[in-house]
Amino acid sequence: MNNEDETPDNRLRRELPEEVPAAADESSAPQQHQAPPPDAAQAARTQPAETLTGRQRLVKGLWPPRVSRAQLIVALLLFGLGFGLAVQVASNSDSGSALRGARQEDLVRILDELDNRTQRLEDEKQGLEDQRTELENSSNQAAEARKQTAEKEKQLGILAGTVAAQGPGITLTINDTKGTVKADMLLDAIQELRAAGAEAIQVNGVRVVASTYLSDSGKGVSVDGNKITQPYRFKVIGKPQDLEPALNIPGGVVQTLEKEQATVTVERATKIVVDALRAAKLPDYARSSSR
Image (cartoon, rainbow, N blue to C red; front, side, top):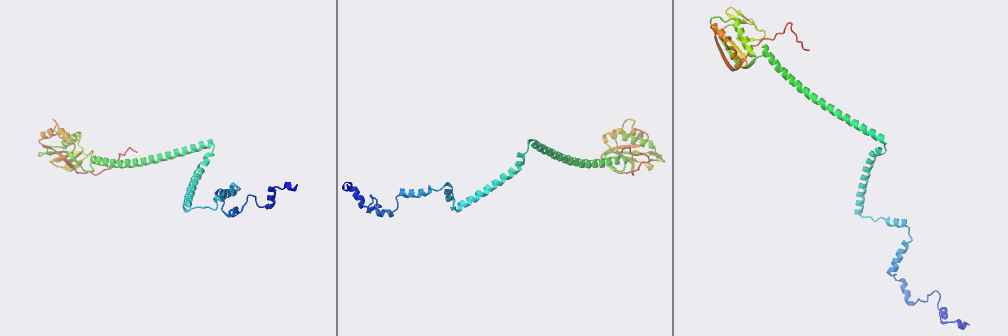
């Protein structure tokens, strides 16, 4: 039976040691120290990675960091930009966070307060502008009033005889060699000149005013108590085209004086100076009725 079981294969197995593979030979022994083939090396590298978790792979990829100088500069710039944007957004969010959380009634009240404040500012602005305009107008009106007052004072001074006057007019000269000219004839000449528009009259150095009176004085005539003698010279300021014809009307002053054998001469002039003055006299009883 032992002979039957002893086959060539069994006999070969008894002769070879069990730890030596049957397919092994001496030529394959040196290849154990050589580098594995590319596929085997790739498999050897990838095999440990398959055993790592996702967090471990992330940590292994981030640490240790491999950062260049250019990457560091870019990172700092991006960090600064992000920080600025965050600050801006935070400031805008703070200003609008209160309104976002407000109720509709509160928003309406806030809008009303803003409208009221705007209206108050507009009213204050308009009031200041009106005040400025009023001050400017007041200043202009005051200056204009002072100017008009000064001009009115000059006009009244001319009529009152307190200031000198000049302007176009005529010169009336009466020569009375026989002494036949009386005070009433000179008064008629003054009245005729006033009616023709005379504004200032001077007779032989005496200013004629509203209160002027004439009287006979010997062989001459007195004007407001001042005796004057011939020739009687009238300086009259007014429109010459009206004054001269008023004296030469038929039956007027010139013809009446010529009947008394007096010589009358009327000359027009573009400038007549009336420089005789009267002292201002305050009235004894009359007072201004204006308040």
